[in-house]
Amino acid sequence: MGASLKARATNDRSVPIAQSKRTPLAGDLLQLVESSLDDDKAENIVVVELSGKTAIADYMVIASGTSQRHVGAMADHIQRRMKGIGLKGIAVEGLKQCDWVLIDAGDLIVHLFRPEVRLFYNLEKIWKNTRSTVITEAQSAGV
Image 1 (tube, helix red, strand yellow):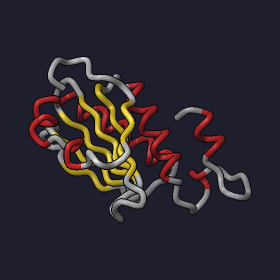
Image 2 (image 1 turned 60 degrees about the horizontal axis):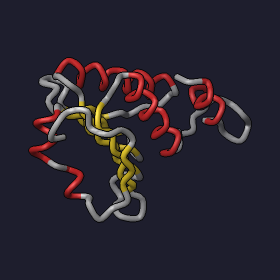
Image 3 (image 1 turned 90 degrees about the vertical axis):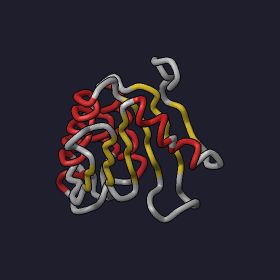
C-alpha cells in the first residue's frame, strides 16, 4: 500500500484507517484498487461512477487480466490491500475458475475478467449512460 493512501486515509484524529473503526471512503478504496491493478499490469481499466445512479455502490471498476492465473492474482492482491487498511466484510465471487471475479467492498465493486468473458458480458454497455473514466487502454485487439 502506498504511503500517500495511508496518509490520506485518516479519520478526524489522524489515526490510520487500519487502526480506526471507520470504513474507508469510496474514493480511498478506488485509489487503492487503481494502484493495485496498475502494479499488477491489468489491462483496459475502466471506472464507472455510480453515485446518484444506483444504491449498490459509488464506483465500479472493470479490468481485464491476460489469463485465469492473472485474474486470480489481481483479485488476491486487491483483497490483501483492502484487508491491510482494515476493511472487513469483503465479498468475493468467482475465484474458483477466475474467468470473472467480483469483489464487493460495499461502496466499490470490482469486476476482473479474462478478455473474452468481458466481451461477452459487456458491462460497460449496460452502464453506457453513466460517467466512466478509462484508466488504461486495451492492449489486446478486440477488448
